[in-house]
Image 1: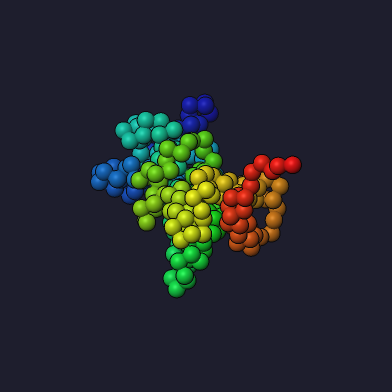
Image 2 (image 1 turned 90 degrees about the horizontal axis):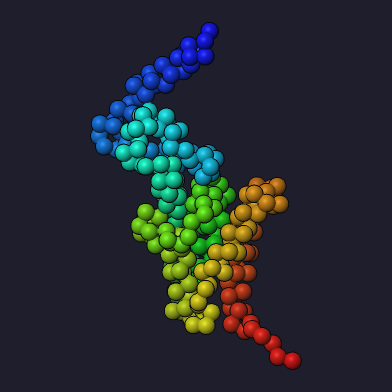
Length: 239
């Protein structure tokens, strides 16, 4: 059998699948192709992180031609960029849920501190529960331009970075954090929790038993919280 003949069954099968797919027909005729491609991209990211987000595979899963996809995404980077934002929005929802679980009857200062710590706990929970989406959301080499993007916002209307900033502002307003401590606090807190997440996902801590990071998370965010407080006293020492 010639190579061209050998390839025909697969091609025919792919075409038949595309033609038979209700998703393909619905998304094409009802104008939801962009949404369907994004959902396929998110599924790919969930399965294998950012490297697995490939436009051709997304079109195959949706059941349309590459030319149809190019009307919505010019190339793979365009699709990946949108998937990154959507993955950050999923992270924001997990973080918001952790923050909302903080009791309402705490005094303002204690509640502000608890909600700040919940941001870190939610971040680590998302990393452990959705490692592929986490890597896509926070390991793709982009700057902070998405930190306030509506596309990266969760159901609360806030992005993960904005939720962290909001919690720090609340600590400042309630006197938990001083004016001197506030600048750059987002970067310090984020670096600490992200470091543990990456060590557990891809570094020497990846062999930790299941649930270990969940147990460590409250201790880590407490250390970050106390570290921000101590940072006011840091600086060059005389003598």
